[in-house]
Image (cartoon, rainbow, N blue to C red; front, side, top):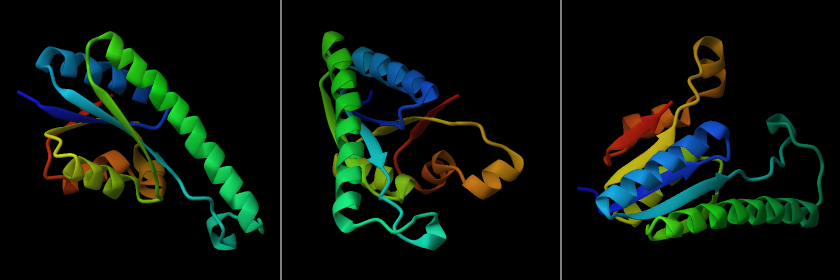
Length: 147
């Protein structure tokens, strides 16, 4: 049924449930998995909420975020391996989460994207947006959303 599944994570408990479901589905289908975490770029503009930070400090902070994400993904890969699922991992640095996930799914020829929805409504959704909604409306790959 599915050959390659992309599972998106942001490290939240709801995202952990999506990982669990995605790995279980992959085990049933004997599919390979790529787990992706998109790490934001450090805000360097005052208008984006940043303050003056040296380029060396920005690089150090972003490197720490990437290292932390890599550790999280290594744990997920180990969990998948214990279930007999081949798991590749990818940490991507971008502020464009949805676009990055869609691009990675295309690049790795995935036939399903599994991700969580945080269920924001009303003003919060309007202000914060929904990466899941963006993936749903722009992806040519089927998307399984877990709540």
